[in-house]
Length: 457
Ligand SMILES: Cc1cc2nc3c(=O)[nH]c(=O)nc-3n(C[C@H](O)[C@H](O)[C@H](O)COP(=O)(O)OP(=O)(O)OC[C@H]3O[C@@H](n4cnc5c(N)ncnc54)[C@H](O)[C@@H]3O)c2cc1C
Image 1: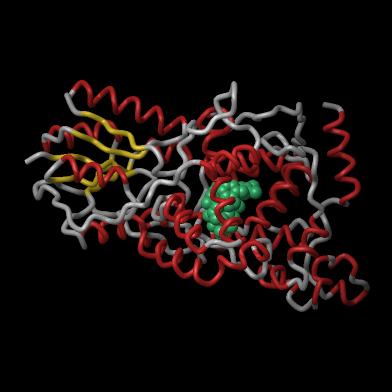
Image 2 (image 1 turned 90 degrees about the vertical axis):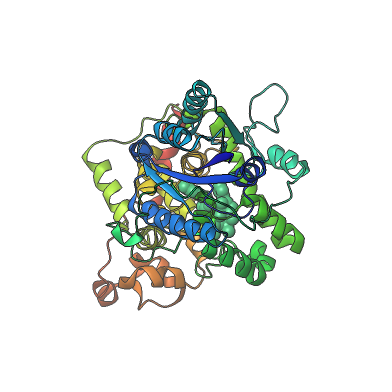
């Protein structure tokens, strides 16, 4: 019997899975393997929400493979050692995996290649599994990545789109390969109470129903905070339970303005991945340094704590921060408003905000989180780095009747309409009856502080 190993990482699905397909073409038996590697946790992955979602994904992947006559093999330990052991045990001569983009993933890939070479086993790394267009496939003249989104988007849309692969009809896994038990979601502590359910079945169901119900109005409604009609596919894409290529394909088939706008967002995901692949240090260092001297000390610490806990006194900021704590997810407009508030209004280092987001976001990933934070901070790829979002204007525009704020800030639930965005305007008994903090800072003052800091740079 010829045997191949499929090493799963951020691609936890059976549909549109090039490594699985290639492994099945090359061997009679396949070992679908996931390694719980403590180094991944140490690298910052170990947030409870993501571990819980991962547990769902692994259980569902196991079911998806079992439906086709296979199963998922789970091992715990160093990825390279575990793959090596399995290759020796099964006599596998090929290992297939998806290409990663983080420095961590690429270093792991290089170590694995070397170790397997020594054992006479070949490693196949498949591009275009995690992203639609592999990082580095489209390049501007004279650079190793695009630093501006629009020209990248133009080139990205002109690239040929791979046809999504169907799930294999059947597979055989050697019977004598041992697996550890797949951890259940319920075994993970400190999970956000409103965390979504993970797994390929749920991801595919969501993709299908969202495309049918909301794609056509996505262009007009994607910023509507209370409407909450964006796809919520981000965690499924993060874990690879849904293929980004398939999402582009299916949206494109429906066509129209909504589809175009949605596909453009998926292109942002690839854009950040290609920046990070070329500049792995941008995960922690300013991509475009602005000589910021971020606020530090007790006052800044107190402001940071208020921001984290959703008690800044700016209702839309607090609503979004509480949504994050409750669901492990936040609407994109909320992410923009809260991030701008932290870095520009409070003038606190974007890394503090990125760290807090990563501790909670179920879709939290290095490329999209760190580079979106840098975009908002003006240290990244935004072509208007000094722009500051005014939280009150943003609230009136994207939550015009205040429903989003009333949903997440119960202290303000009795205030009608857009008045909920400015509780400081209440007077006398009305103000006294509302148990909600005064604004941490006046906006004009904060704007002046930011402008001075940046102009001094
Ligand atoms: C400060 C900040 C931090 C962020 N951190 C993350 C993160 O850790 N992980 C993450 O996946 N997204 C992140 N985003 C991007 C974006 O907010 C989320 O992808 C989006 O809100 C997810 O909701 P959705 O699936 O309903 O999106 P939809 O509007 O339905 O968009 C579809 C898909 O496009 C991709 N996408 C949309 N907007 C962006 C964007 N700006 N950048 C990259 N990809 C995008 C996502 O994969 C998303 O699922 C961040 C944005 C900001 C401003």
